[in-house]
Length: 362
Image (cartoon, rainbow, N blue to C red; front, side):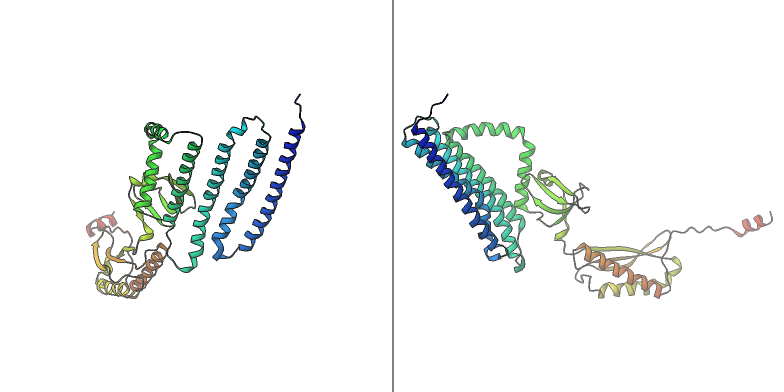
């Protein structure tokens, strides 16, 4: 049975007092932070200040108890007790402090990025979410790497030895995780070349399934939202080997239609073509600087085809479909105005009169 003397009881009493005092400080801190965060809510000029308080809430709590732990250790040291824990206390305290700093930075960086876009959203500033997202991800990775190096040095590992081991281990890891490394490199190239940004709509002709709006560009994969509102995760290395169309960056969209009229309306073709050309040349949705064509294009099996070729002045798909619909409806009115009609597949059988007479005579 363990025997406790008066010295042990004194140490225990002082330790309990320190812990209670730390708990009281913790409660006071929580109240102050809660009121401050609530007061700053909705004030865009203090978004980063609010982000600081929300990010620092948990780390400061840990810091309070770290100080309490250090005070208790100092109390134990004053009584010259031979405890193994006392020899590793400095190392534990340094690692604990490092954890607090890393935790705060990892929580604070994303909040600053979010506030940056929120604060500038109504100032009509062109913001690059792709660049800020990449910067945040690289910053967080950098913080973690630096923290790991500092932690290993704190534990007594030589940085030179770590680099030597890392060089040999890097080769092994590189061979075992080449696909992951390829994805990381692909993510880096996406941020450098920037074939698309967050919010862009992309389509791949090589992979028909890759079609949607870019929601997030990560270090390993890119998240798309398809037309069916399904999230799709594409490995970044795949973008290095396929062709992509970025429809968001289109300034124009092409209208190419074949209008088929009956052969009975061949005399009306010049007037119909002239009116269709007037529609194209006077339409507000057509880019008049781009190529425009309205010509008889083909004598098909059942129709005479008129080629209508032009470019809209908007690259947005919704605008394109509305402009195209309006033009097609106006073309319909032109065809009706001239007494013509649209052709449809027909077959005409020519039977000689002699065959008809022989058939009737039985």
